[in-house]
Image 1 (spheres, one colour):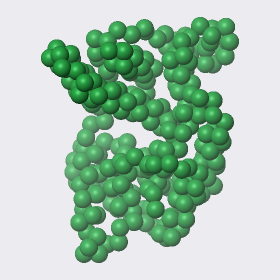
Image 2 (cartoon, rainbow, N blue to C red):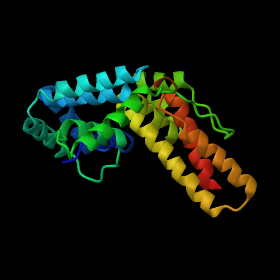
Image 3 (cartoon, rainbow, N blue to C red):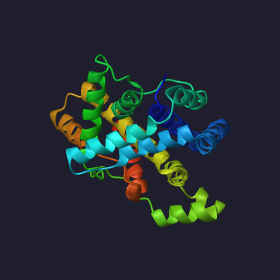
Image 4 (tube, helix red, strand yellow):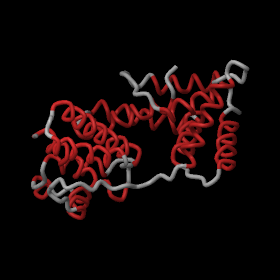
Length: 255
């Protein structure tokens, strides 16, 4: 059985692709997913379980472990077969490979691992993983590189998105149009798109590190890679960060 958190990420990624590429089927899939969340209490509870354990920051280990315990105890009030049946409904909406995710796997293990001598190591490793995540500050690091890029006027983008003035919309570059569409979507979908863009840039930089021999170029690539690795999604700076990431991608690929 695939875990709910990773299925949700796959659906969100599909929706972001649907808006960028005008894919009607992707939008229909997301509507079915939202409908299931509204109708199925198990799925709604699983959604908030993941949101609680992924997004919350706590200051002490005692509080973190108690928070985890309460969340898991609440979800375990539901019969396991019923939860599996609900997850299967969502899983049936999508196909394709799911990227491994340590947090999603840890939550899944705590919900579905039987409390036996054999299962205890899995349970406690999952507790440690989630505790460490809850104690970590959810830093909002902005990308700051020397890469030149064309500044995006946020007010212009919002005005275009809200009023749908075709004349102004046609003045935007293709990159800006994509950012407009993404900026109107749910925060989870924007975060997935942001993380995908970071991952793509990291992959391109790794490829360049293999191919390039120049010391100064390699040092610059390593510095940029370090900054990218420290980035996290920030809704307030989403438009600006995505513009920088897009420009960085073009710059790395052109070298």
